[in-house]
Length: 111
Image 1 (cartoon, rainbow, N blue to C red):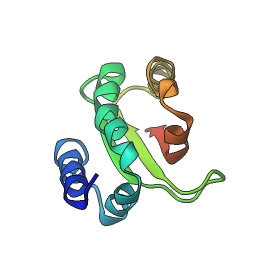
Image 2 (cartoon, rainbow, N blue to C red):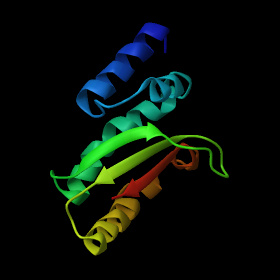
Image 3 (cartoon, rainbow, N blue to C red):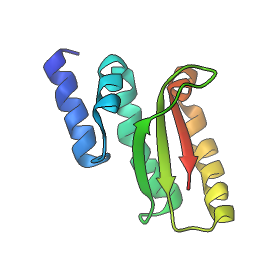
């Protein structure tokens, strides 16, 4: 991808799914462009498993044992028990089918 294509793809991702995206996330995605398709699909999958009332937020994660990456927070009005059950369904229905290197770069949490 050329620089202008990368910028347009990140702009579209921010406009359509992650309006709160900050410059640290943008910079990370400029060097990890392979994550763009997954991050574009993730809100659709969250909507499927959690319902349309769930919100998805993308931030820069602190460094973990596996390195630094991104954090996706799913905020839902569901009870904690229901939210964990749906996160488990998301894991088994879609997330675990993503490549290991993708899952190493993105951590998903539910609130």
